[in-house]
Length: 303
Length: 305
Image (cartoon, rainbow over all chains, first blue to last red; front, side, top):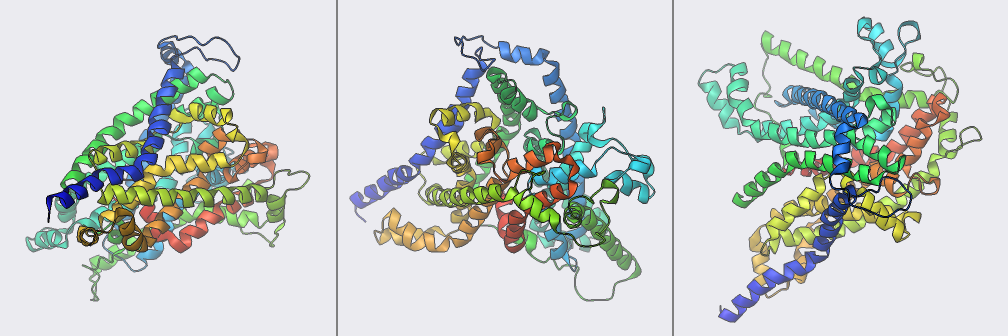
């Protein structure tokens, strides 16, 4: 092949491709990165109310105000509580589901399809149901989950759910676990089934018991899957918004960072505060996601 | 290219499923597994069950204390109230549903076309820095949209876009670019390079290879992306509430539902349940018929698909 055609090919490879994705690249740069910078910019100003006044830069004042803002620290601590219970709950539930299914069982497809359907439904729609079922009325007046608990003899577990003072966020994690366990199941199931059968067989031939096979052969293989799940659940949890709104609106007891951002922006028209909350949220998520993306990028390079 | 995750999940793992007589211990574990699976099944189905049965009890006879009880007689009045509204229940869900369907279909189709082109380039016509740019795209998939929302609302207001439902088409197309590109790229990565090379030797241009070779193979990926964009735009609340400002004229399924159930209409539980069920039906139906494709989209979001 002559030198010119070779050059021509590499030229079209380099530039031709770029030409077609350029509109998307520009869009992403403007609407993701550009608008993030714009948000940062707003968060450094005094745009603390809807009224028109001269825009002045106030440095990091909005951020330092946040630290002193009881409502913000409250929503942050709510988010931490919610995240811990939600991640642990979804992880354990999804893992148990995967363990029950991974060897294959008659009717697996039936169970799997049902376990995964919650993810196709909006948090807002599900929130309506959970808002109702997790009602705080007890004993004679009880309905929903409190009534169900009485009926199966676990009446002592009745509680105030999402209106309780201390446990509201833990109660809020229940519907989240309900909705997201299927995701964990799917990832773990894929993890289990990606392990070559030979590994199991070899361990079995070596005389390992079933529980030993799980503990020493299979579980270690699932570490990358576990990492993926933690990151996915972590960033979903930190973004929690419609799930909370769907169940309990903007109520103070269950307010998380994303909801407080909405309230500050919409109701108080405090755009500087709204953007600074959003940027804090972005940083929290970036700390979790960026290393994962870099790791993923390296993996891709070896593929 | 290894098997994709959905194939892994759905392949029958039959190491221990061979037909043979089970001993006592094995039988115990099998029964234990079925009992546990059934128990979880009940928990998973429960909210939908509650929605369905309480939507059939009429407008007035729905109380929390009988939430789990089947209706004594079937009464569909809650359906008509939720669907078209009445004097004491002024919000109708039908209008918002129609509006949602209108914008969701458009945004899904546009997203799929853009995703396909991008995915093709990122998979088969890599240029210098393309992997880095792709990673930049991916980050856009994980950001909390609150971080861009206030400027976005300002742009929409300045351009007067927030008076029309097209603002949501735009938002979902723009912020759908990363995931759609990712799904198509992963799909095209699996197409052997030799196929493309053969095209190149024939001096076929990039565009021709795409049209005659890649596009005909892309149907499954299009289904995945269309379903994914459909579901996520249908269920979206964040963009809708910020960009349409909760204006009733632009309410979509989720914002209308949130208005209904969050307002003083709390008493009409039957109607609330019915409205939630109606709003859930389109995505549920898609899931029932095309669950495999939905799952594929979902798992792509973990970057492992």
